[in-house]
Amino acid sequence: MTILTTLVIIGVVAVAIVLWSRRLAQQEEPTLRPLSGYTALKGQVGQAIESASKLHISLGRASLTGAANPTSVAALAVLERLAAEGCANDTPPITTVGDGTLLPLAENTLRRAADNAESAAGIPPGTMQFIASRTDAFAYAGGVASVIQQQKILGSVMVGHFGQELAIVTEVAGRSQVQQIIGSDDPLALAVAAPITDNFLIGEELLAAPAYLEGKPDQVASLQIQDVLRILLSLTILGLAVYRLVTG
Amino acid sequence: MFRRGLPLIIAISFGFLTLISLLFGIAEISNLILAWASFLAAVALLLGVINLFSVHAQRMAGKRPFGGHNVYSAVLVISMLVVFGLGLTDLLGMTSGSLNQVFNWVQAPLEAALASLLAFFLLLSGIRLLQRQRTLSSILFLVTAVLILISNALIVSPLLPASLAGLLQQLRDLIQNIIVSSGMRGILLGIALGAITLSIRLLLGLERPYNK
Image (cartoon, rainbow over the protein chains, first blue to last red):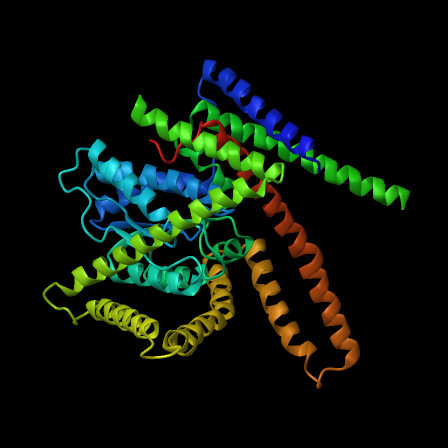
């Protein structure tokens, strides 16, 4: 692919997002197809408060300086939603991270949510926890599993970059009868999540978190542009396959 | 205005600068920016280690420092201090390679042990799924998992006739190379598209995780 092609693709997508978001801003709130992961997310904080227990959210181990950066940005959008609801009821979610770069952003999200809610309790010590560096996947999984086991957790939301080590966390959470919502960009983690819970977000569904949780016109517009791109890409692949089949 | 605008300008400028330097092969700029990012990531890791130490040290400072679950915190804090101490003695030349020995003799075997348990966890999850809901997908999941596990074990067994081993090999290849690969590629393409649109939103300053 030439430089010009890359620039053209970026330019066209950027212009399409801007123009489509302007159009959406003039319309009524668009409806997005329901995703069980986000539907389940909406009731989590309320259930935790009713049962006098806590909610746990883990943001995975993708660095903000690495290639999986968008996954962590989407995971932060989920944290923002849960933190706002939790802090409004003085029960901020216990947050665990597997990369140093996520720690300041996650802590900032929690503190801002507490400030906005004028929470009297604030953010208690131990609410925000760094578990292990991203290179130690199993150490991270073991650490998150121990947090779930040791604290009175009702629900665990695992969104971000996780691999097959997720099986250890889900096993412990399953034994502790903790409700689980899982979202990852790694197909191996999704293979682990599928038999555990119905509430899982497959790859791009996780990246759609800002659109589903905030619903701003530009976020919804980029989601719809993404759908168009997916259809175009699928048709191109299918067309090429048919062409190769016919021409031999 | 200034408080919100400055981070936005910095983020967009550096985003475009990195993109242009990567596209046009100006390695000096992209390497410099990546070096800064790596330095910041290292500082963030140090903050993470301090956070880890303080969370567990505070637990130990409670009423029962070695009681109940606090014993795990105590083990973690003591281990951290020991490893830090070994790092210092290695640096001062009092010991040699002790830090590597700790990793090779403690961490590596522990991680390998956990990794080897994954197959059993997955199989157990499949059985639980079948108990929870007997749908076509849950049956397919368990049957495929059992089939792959058994075929992997039997293909290398000398007891199995060659014709049957060949058949199992073909079946395993069909599942792994066609069905699983196509599904995984579909998911990866979706992720790539999602990442592209989210990255463009970050470049345009429409998504601002650093400035909310």
